[in-house]
Image (cartoon, rainbow, N blue to C red):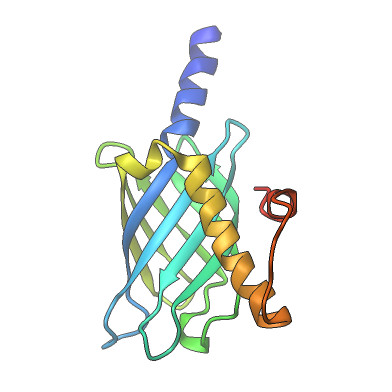
Length: 167
């Protein structure tokens, strides 16, 4: 029984990491870069952040908070995406993504309801510091919103960001 529990835990955390890749926004468009941070749990819950590097003419970045499920047996993800930061232009909005994780190649192949493909490869160096990278993704997007709402912002208490960026 302990071996089975250990195998489930190992499979759940195998997906944990930072994935770097591209997203084809729409047919004919130049793919945009993406960074996806992801954590899976033994209870099938998956959380993370997705940041799209937008073309310069439409903005800098769009970040989404991801929450959903991860089937360990099927290596399948189903994630809802909520804007986390300034809203993206309509053609870059993401509401959900789903697809598979290949543990052999450590890659993700995901698709959204509009047929846009998200392909990403695990970055081992960044994955070694997963919590820091996730916190940075969260804080950068949160800072953009606060700056847009309040102009100049000076944060003197880091606890504010920690509470906002809990994942």
